Image 1 (cartoon, rainbow, N blue to C red):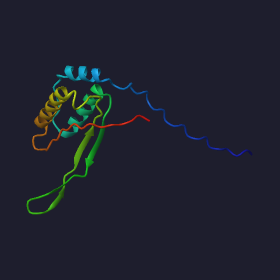
Image 2 (cartoon, rainbow, N blue to C red):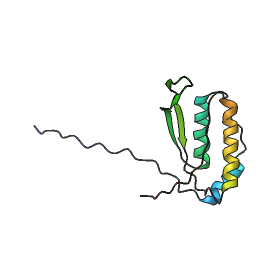
Image 3 (cartoon, rainbow, N blue to C red):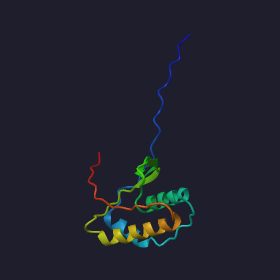
Length: 132
């Protein structure tokens, strides 16, 4: 009787991703963004941000419940989980400052309306990366 060998598992095929977004296209997409979110809590806000970021910039990374620690006035340390979203935007912090500032301010204002009690930080930093 012939011994049966296991076939190696095929790697799941990765979907074909969009080509990199150009600076001009990113600015055009930012200018078109006028939609108002219809969300009421943090969970649906994150889903809406993911939808928006993948629509405008094609991708984003969401880290949920990241450990964030604070110290109270009486010296006690407490854990306050945070959600962090990274978006790689093909814009220059220097050259596209006005477009980025307007978008980030709108983003923060919309988030503050939904999450009245939570701290919301929106930042932009230049990142230099190389494709492999």
